[in-house]
Amino acid sequence: MSRHIPLLFGSRLGGLTVLARTFGDGRGAKYYFKCACGNTFVAHAAEVRRGKRKSCGCRYKRENSDVGDTIPRYR
Image (cartoon, rainbow, N blue to C red; front, side, top):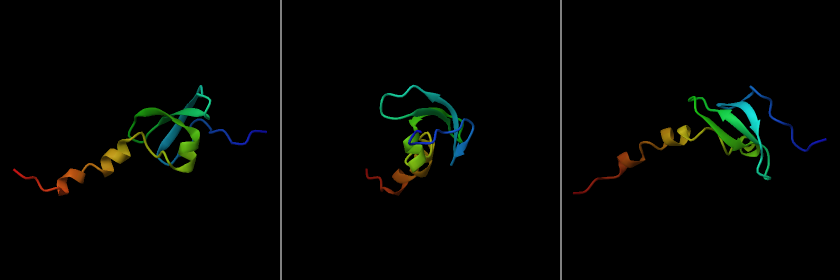
């Protein structure tokens, strides 16, 4: 019996959909995921299960896109 339950293909975890399992690099299972924005990427299953990975990176870019707007611009 394995320690971890494998992710089911087609299941959704937050905004991510599991597409397929890839060959691991010896540090845990990796899967192909499809983000809500439509991008596909590879990530460790543990990162997604623990909530460390919630998107392909688009969420971070979207949430931090207005950071530079609050900094005053000097001549």
